[in-house]
Image 1: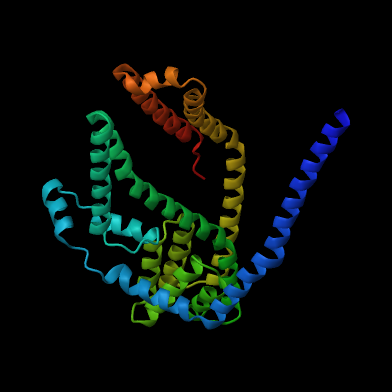
Image 2: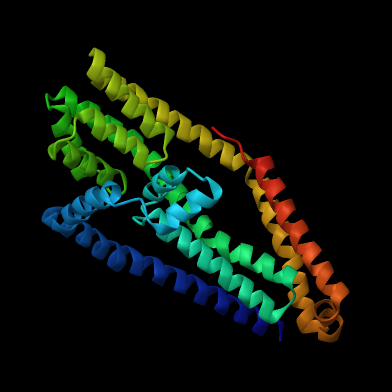
Length: 326
């Protein structure tokens, strides 16, 4: 009997290993070649990327930023940060008018409030409305951080390519075009937009300034500032770009080390947030009448509300404790 159990376990292990090997083989021999071939075709054709770049250039800054919703918000609240919201939308690659984005936030909040009033009390309605209204803002912040992280990873190689191209005798405009062709999205697309903008009549300084506004990256601002100073005063731009690339690479190494050192704290925060929810779900399956008291009794609903607020506050505090800016 024991021998049969050992054989059964070994069979399961072999099946699991076989599935993993099969998945790795499919990814290596089928998925990766198809993806590489598609990227090569897009790079050789260039038409799709050119159309996207040109559309982004004209949609990003030429849209009318005024509208009834924005005018109403500014007149009622005196809120004058529409330009900052437009900049954040561009930094997240969300080509949307600020008024439309604020309308989505308001609609989500109203839907959450109506759903909460239908299902429970006004307190839950306010909480659900605030949560749903915050979802588009969270999505905006997530897209913005993801784009910034991708660009920062691409910056060292892009700086080296810029420096080598300048040493080979290319002009700054030609160097930007070369980098836009060789560096993948999103940094390649941003460089292409900058190149196209100066071709369409903007000065190099204006195009680079707008590049710094479209990307929420401190490393990219180093590059923009260095080029702007070099355009004003002159100097060896290739050497400056090499130094910037070295600094960015070292900073990324330090950031990875800090992330590894704070991994335990972040993992503990995730466990402490998920554990109460999993415990409650387990109680619903194991002892449903005992757990349903928290959902049917007014005191139980208030206790759940207080627990949820406490979990959110605790998660925020733990996140701030392990958030180290590098």
